[in-house]
Image (cartoon, rainbow, N blue to C red; front, side):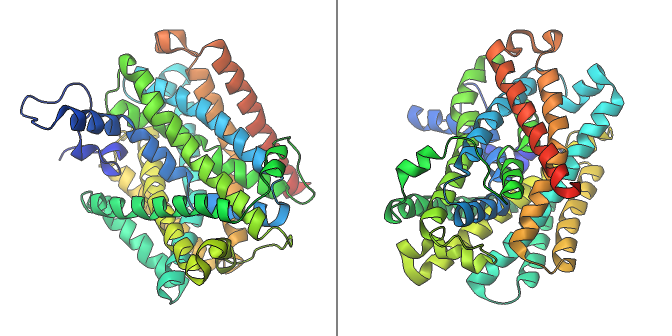
Length: 431
């Protein structure tokens, strides 16, 4: 049985030329071949974007905008910069590692550290699974009616089948891309129609945390400074046999758009929320209330547009999250960095099952449930960030792709930031 990775599971790679010149029998026009090659180079960006922009990003951004206006936009901007720095480290590690990043961590820092890294990513995937299960069910219930719990079960089951039958996702993926693209376009138009105070929004780039906003800051960082998704970029890069010669192109068409696009969307969500819902400073407690951010553009149909986009974001994130977490745990346990291993499949099933179980058991405010689950990820993120920073500075491993001084400056500042946010969360829990 042919081994598969996440790259072949959730990307368009099966339909495109991976790298290099097209095969001699490829008779497509040169411009079309170039476009297809560019799309293939951008592949890891789709993985990072799908993992990062899910219900947690939507819920935390809308909650922040509705309660605190533009005050927390700076958190998104800082998260984007640091996430870009660490995703770039991971891509370079994917080019240089002989087998996988966790295998190299075992060789350089010891087997225990490598196993801990896989378990760390797996634990973050468990946290993200809650938001994906809750968001997918609530989104579809807003579109079709019925119980959100039933729809959560349906979505989780569908993702489980997709992980077993890879080809099904090719069709589903295109539908989801359209749904999320429609939502992104709607946010852009809504941001114009809602007439936000752009001057005030820019002025909010000065770091400050409003009273009571600590948990939201933690959740925003946990979602948008996604070190687990950045960590996994090395796997998708390695699987596609990227070379040092392709690094610059992969960065321009893949890494940068893959990080900035979700961050820009989250920023627009927060800006529109501040303009539409933030005037009263009321805490939003339901996804039906969140959908009101589209009313300036689409009136009553705005809730349906929001729900379709929410479901698409949740579903695609659910696939990426379950598969990526399963693969890296499998690799950490020495069972291979592939989605076709029995260990990876079992781990992916556990991720889906835990998300659904918590959704069924914890009948509370769904937005607070998602935000709380996202916030938990910052407890593990500093460890993953430290590994990426240390490994990307290994001269014998990285060669000419070793971190430069400015990349280390960004990396250290980003590490200190995520460590501080983790400490803030611990203080919120036990202080």
